[in-house]
Image (tube, rainbow, N blue to C red):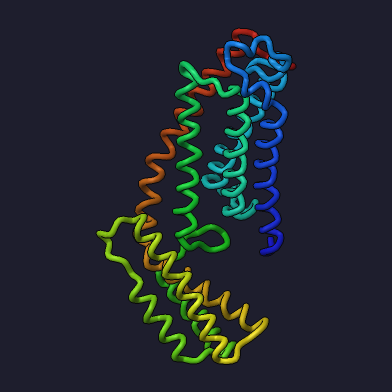
Length: 289
């Protein structure tokens, strides 16, 4: 999948989630804003209540999406027979899509009324979604090959050298510019005892400032137009790569700790969801089946 196709792919997945959220909010805005004790008399009650035609249906769909998203991604990671089907990175993105769309549908299935054991499952689901967002950020900070394999420090240093050579040979960037950038990157490393959130903010501000300085250096050297954009893109890649090298060990540790927090919430959510489905079926809530 090329860069443009991948961008379109991600945009479509994001658009679907946003579209579903807004559509359901618009369609049921009157019902969802009605006090709970008055909803029984609302004209949309038979459709949007948790056991209603629409409410029950989106609950089934949301549950199915989450189960498929969780177990599909787990199967792709663990079974060799599936290793040739697509790239792990794309599987992860589709896993995130299903495990975001699913909770959106389940949220509307509850009609924003939480209670009993289902509340435990719902808040576990919220914890899974929030921790998933955090996990996605951590995952992106660990450089990987196109197949999803973590890259070693030697791989990263080799990539950084290649970027340096391209800037020097292909775009004729002045050596003093490269030296100035390397010196600035070395000085950007924050002490480990510094609060991690502060380190992220400071690093982001530093990188934005450095990119602006580099652009001005390139203009002063007469690099313009398409070459300017390409050289700037390579500089940004080098800056990001340098950050990931500096944070590699920390991010690998964070990812291990993250799994410890993420998986229990997912298991609690799935177990209670299954109990909820079984009880609903025993009470005769079978939707259209």
